[in-house]
Length: 403
Image 1 (cartoon, rainbow, N blue to C red):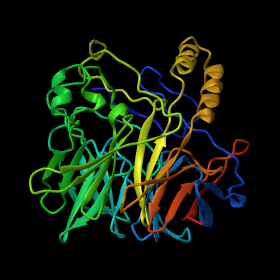
Image 2 (image 1 turned 180 degrees about the horizontal axis):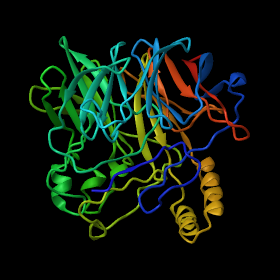
Image 3 (image 1 turned 60 degrees about the horizontal axis):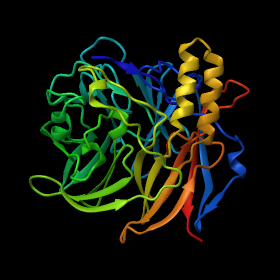
Image 4 (image 1 turned 135 degrees about the vertical axis):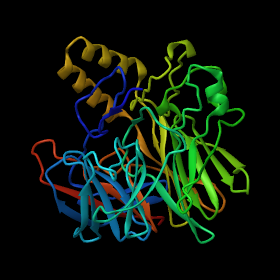
């Protein structure tokens, strides 16, 4: 199995044979910006700073919005802050010890306000804010390797249901098959539903009938990586580059598909066509240039569907060829240009009626990889300066208004 990890915020394209992961900054004067589209507007209400010279990614915000969680790739530290930017705790688990999670497979997330959850190759680990291990949950099967594309706000999630705590995570089961075989598409399940108390998990959400992933072609992991949100006993799910929002209700046996919404996204491209004979058993691939529904959030009475419309595949092929031929600087410049051209934003739906109400692109000056949400607010990470190396991370808090 191939293990591959890189930050989606790195500006230099890395290992195109396996993945294309990148993002670019924007105008840093976000304090002066508010944005209005389709009668909705994002209004900046607050921000917090934390002194850090590293490579941080904004991972999670607590459900009440009082705490934020940052992961720093440079130090491998998990850092928790209060809403004023004061340090609550930080720790690293890179040593070969029983409480180390190993290769990180999803960004960490909050469990309540006093615990942090990390899904790693060695299992799912729950720590307090200082890094003391509280409990460990084994994966349902041994894993030989993993691959993951970090996206701001796309972290392991926790919910409370009937007085019990559960985790929702991307399923990483092999199911004794791989994407070059029909069995993979028959057996696939997108999500692990994990009982924290017992450690037992159930894999849920298949490729539904009529899905593009059942058309006889082959797909890489980033093509179908799930985006999901649990709201009032319903699970909202989209799978990668398939522009559909599916709503499930939970039954005693399996989630029951309730509603399917075809998403209307400007400039949203189609996934590349790959034949199944191109896939080798044991290989793992992600591609950050292709279209995807990257996340789903609840904000007040709205559902936000975060999308990345995708790059022109012919131009990305040109950039990859430049990279492979040794023209790394020219390839990087082309990728940065292509990234700026991609539409990135979120659709707004009414939570009760599921009617689409708006479509907002990202504010300038923030990282366009993703965002967090809690209550009536959205949180974005400041884009890094293109001129100087900064010794802090800044998180912006926006209010979503409908004038």
